[in-house]
Image (cartoon, rainbow, N blue to C red; front, side):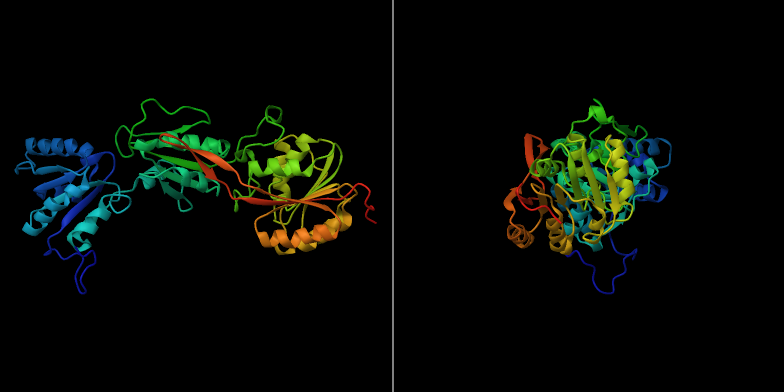
Length: 447
């Protein structure tokens, strides 16, 4: 049928026969407001998920026994196989039989509403939404949710969840599919992403039902053995707890352990890339390391955990970055020689000549920054540049070669395991080009 209304039609015209679609929460019919119950009392056909039909029948019998209803029980149909409903609903509509469809939350948001509109047309339907499961979940936590995003795993592989987590959303609602892993899949993906310390894991079951349950799971805590199939998960970003530096590995720290910029969470070098960059820097036991475009400080601070005698100078242009890098340094038990906020190449004049340089930022100024670095790099020094484009690689490689450095090029492509119902699928991280230059030990020292 046509899903669009005819020009000049009145949406609320009472003379037009329509099917009423009533949203409800997990409380079912008992949770409906009085106007919705009035529509239900008039219905000769009631369609609902199997889990709600018994409650609808029990409600009708109670109302009849109390003398509030003197009509026979309407015809009841289960909506768990929605394609089989369209014929009887269409017949009821054509005959002017009062009909009601019960649905979860907002029927037009991942509900039966889409199929009803597709088969019967919007003009044949009147929707009465209840609060969605997302609204109820955030209401239970008392957290505003205008900054929240959501992802559905219903009938889908969970790989997009792993990719979405890399963007570090401040709040993420996951509509789970118990048939494909449910909350367990979310739990495993969060751990595989290295972000357990960065998110509160809230499990919300049977929202709106008298026996609803909302609980926060700690990292590593198993799911409840009596987990209800009707559930969703909220992942709420939170500052990670202070770790014990002695209990952590020397390098390759989980991404979720790092404090982030509040307005750009996730803008940091991922764990797999940090490991490669630290190897390519060939860190000496002592000397000067420049970390330019330091971000949250992840590469330089892990370098200090490996080589405590290095003098790290971290430079980042974003306001507030010095305090953030210093906080991360305290968390991981290291002490940089200096942390500066400023733009390269101008700010480089304040730094001592380097033995090792990582250029992690710079954008369009990267060539100018590299030119200054090459003027200052000590004999035997190494400069490493992680890059995203072939054009940047071609431009900067020429600078290294023209300055007499031995050049190496590589590409790092890493994947992280994302659980599937039957096993594990690899979710890719963004590929990174790594350009590396080494100055010979006999080269003339910078003036």
